[in-house]
Length: 108
Image (cartoon, rainbow, N blue to C red; front, side, top):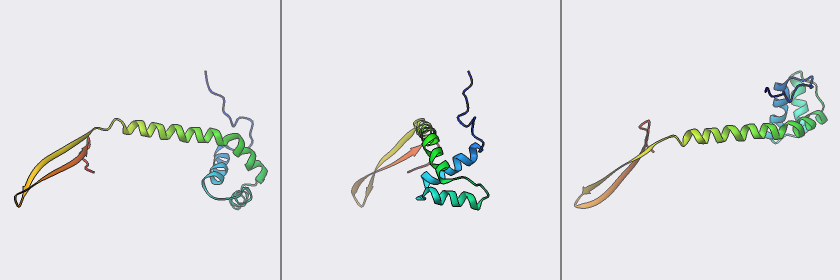
C-alpha cells in the first residue's frame, strides 16, 4: 500500500514548506523574519501560513530527523574496535601503553 503524501492538497511545493519550517526551527528567527527571507527569494507567504506549516509538518520533520540519527548510530555499532597493548621498559621503569584501533585501522 502506498503512503499518501502529506503535501497533497497544498499549492506550495514541499521544498518551500520544508525550507520555511527548517528556517524557523533551526535559526533564532521569528515567523515574520522567515516571511521576509522567503519574500526576498520571491516566495510570498504569510507568517500565519508559516506558523500553520510549522504546527502541521514540524512533528513529521522531527521524526524524520530522529529516524536518520538512529540509523546513523546503528551504522556505527557495526564498527569493530581492537586494543593494542604492550608493556615497555624505559630507564628501568615499566610502562603500560595501549592504543584503540577501529576496523579501518584508524587510531584514536
